[in-house]
Image (tube, rainbow, N blue to C red; front, side, top):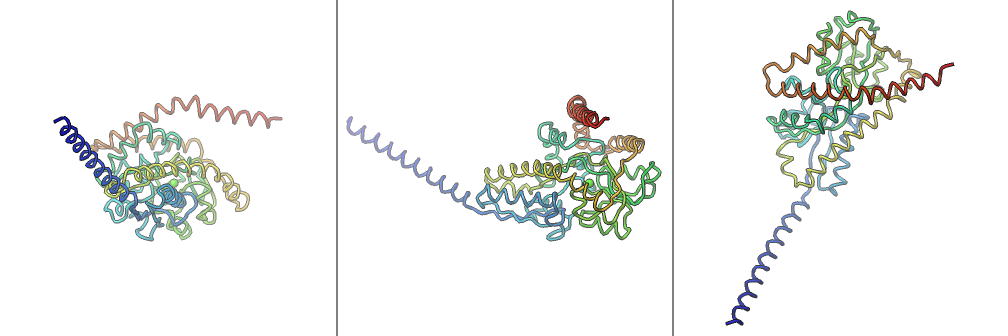
Length: 374
Ligand code: CA
């Protein structure tokens, strides 16, 4: 009897082990199959192919993803117009015609009035502050909520730092000088410019040079010295104004089709997210490093006239910006929450940056001036 029981136990134990072994093997096989699958994706962008800075970032992301995934996620990057026009990126990814895209949320203001909060707000957050709001201040969850009805997953995918106010062929001494001016200036900056008496036009980067050259527009803001030199804007306008009140730290976006994202195993999804964060940082580092040399080349080699917008013009633009922001949400409950979150974060971060970033930069500048004093 005892012997029989022992045999039964042995049989049961063996069967259990065998069953477990079978399940383990099947699970491992499934996992191996999933991890062996190669996902070939397309990423469309709003930038000219390989444009320094903005256009290079998605290429770097694709390279990083390919290496980190050992070739399992293979993304081909397309410039504006290669698969879809620059302004067709949102729809192409939303519909799943391509898996992902790289651009800027404020280009989609016509569909989503609150989208510009995730790129840039006039007199709003700097690059460092945008990263704070998005990644640790609740901004990312709001952005995901805004894009969810379009089957899009947004990721922060770059930042240029403070931009330039733009290129003009006449001097801007008062707000009256903006009257009737046709300017390439997208997003909320464009709305402020319209209220200031100008006419704002949104055109992609690849068309700014020709539009300015042929007189379709009188003025244009694009990015800053590094990118503006790359597309040759110093050849078609005389005065280069600062500071970029309209885009103090614009975030670029990576958008991924929701179903495409869900089709990836967890490790590839994480690789995609981490690579996006990497270009988010890398782009800012590159602009920070290259802007001044590009500006020196413009001024010293190409005789660009560098000008600062007068304080009273900036003060008036800031007043108009507050009016534009207050008028955006309307009866849109989500837009109201986005506006509230952004505004609260701005107030809070400004208070600390007053005694940290700003106090330090002022102190550093004062020291430099002291060194040069006779
Ligand atoms: Ca810009």
